[in-house]
Amino acid sequence: MKALLIGGTGLISSGIVKALQTRGASITVFNRGQTENRFGTAIRQLTGDRNDFAAFERTVSAAGPWDVVIEMICFRPDQAESAVRAFRGRCGHFIFCSTVCTYGNTQTIVPTLESTPQHPHSTYGRDKVACEQVFLRAHAAGMMPVTIFRPSHTYGVGGNVINNLGWAPTFVDRLRKGRPIVVSGDGHGLWQSAYADDVGLGFAYAAGRQVCFGEAYNVVADEVVTWDEYTRRTAAAIGAPEPRIVHLPTEFLLALDRPRYVALEEIFRFHGVYSNAKLKQHVPEFRNATPYAEGVRRTVAWMDAHDKIVSADTDPFEDRLVALWDRFQADAAKALPA
Ligand SMILES: NC(=O)c1ccc[n+]([C@@H]2O[C@H](COP(=O)([O-])OP(=O)(O)OC[C@H]3O[C@@H](n4cnc5c(N)ncnc54)[C@H](OP(=O)(O)O)[C@@H]3O)[C@@H](O)[C@H]2O)c1
Image (cartoon, rainbow, N blue to C red; front, side, top):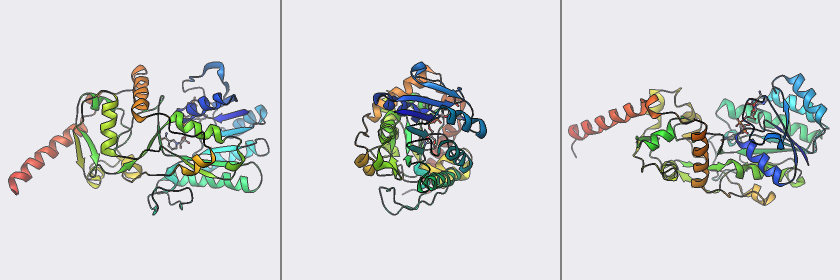
């Protein structure tokens, strides 16, 4: 199988490359050559910027045709249109990496199915829906068979460890130093985190599979955890002390510093619970093989080795916030005795 990944050296991409290697695929990646390539000469490199549409289309078209193309870095419809120009009639199967953010937060069925109507509330989600539509139109017009993959949160080597409030690179150090960890609401919000190598199995084993043509799949973890549980598990996995979790109202956090908490506002404040049953049925090779504790240990080992963990001392905002909250609680207990 001759496979091309647009991207290819990123977090999810690397999981896909590993899984495609187990299928014996001949793998080419197209990217700018800026992100570390962990596969060396085992994969072929095409270098360029996918936003230089003319050069991108020339390069990938000249190196084709392809049995499968996996598009990892398409966020806008003009990028999608460029990909259709590059690959129509020159690719046996086109897989687009979308996101569960395309559903928005108005689902009435839990877990969310692929057939759930899409009402995205972020620009990211809306643009991904527009890209999906470009590709599905190309599929319907017979230009190339298309499959849509919608990952939920995916973590792993090459990435970060998120927390309930966002992507702050200080989270791991906060846990290690036993600093209080703020979790929004009452900590019972539900979350799924999948390991990149497991997500990669879904993409790689869907490649070329006719039952997947014209279909969309959630590619998510089996386990659903509360944010409190997520926080405790992460601390335990990396040998940090049991964290002191401090619950604060979501609206209060957003009113304090909306730009700081944009990920909370757009994503993490909502339950994220998606079904992977359809993917498991059509692509039985997809499985959650990596326990969370193991996945997060590998991720943090990589972050340590690549100096990606930022000291909690560089950002005292949440320490100051918790100190004020503690004082408020003490004052309230004095002023309003039970
Ligand atoms: N991680 C998650 O939780 C999550 C959840 C849902 C959906 N997703 C989707 O996953 C995809 C990201 O996949 P990933 O994790 O493999 O990517 P990633 O970790 O963000 O890496 C980006 C890849 O694309 C390349 N790249 C970036 N900009 C480029 C450009 N202008 N031209 C050419 N190459 C470029 C990078 O290499 P160079 O830097 O060398 O160019 C790298 O190979 C996105 O579509 C995102 O919406 C992710």
